[in-house]
Length: 174
Image (cartoon, rainbow, N blue to C red):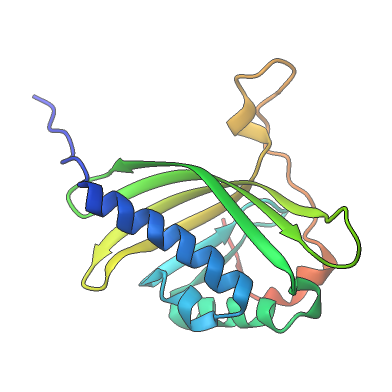
């Protein structure tokens, strides 16, 4: 007999969604502490959209990541738009989610550029402080996620990390 994971309560789902929203608000308003607080103490951010995926793990590295973005003049006016959030239980104190993300930067005159068009693949963990991100993978909207569509190969389409992000640090993942 296969044992299924317990369902998430409406409050669990609300807390997970709230953490997703707090991540975007903190990152876009330069709140490095608030950003890092969205993650479990050993949480990881993995940016898997570039030719070389990069990872930031633990509070200290996540704080450096958020502070670096905050201190870059080119990120003022940035907004993360997160939608179509799907949340599923993954054991008693864990959950997974997927959501769309688009990042727009409001600088200069319109039209404003979309700098990220992709999705988040998240693992959440229930902690004493509530639901926190155990691992977030940032992916472009290309490759395997589109494999079922006509004309798509499903191959990962990596791009070079933009020069403006070169100072983010992190470690090569994979």
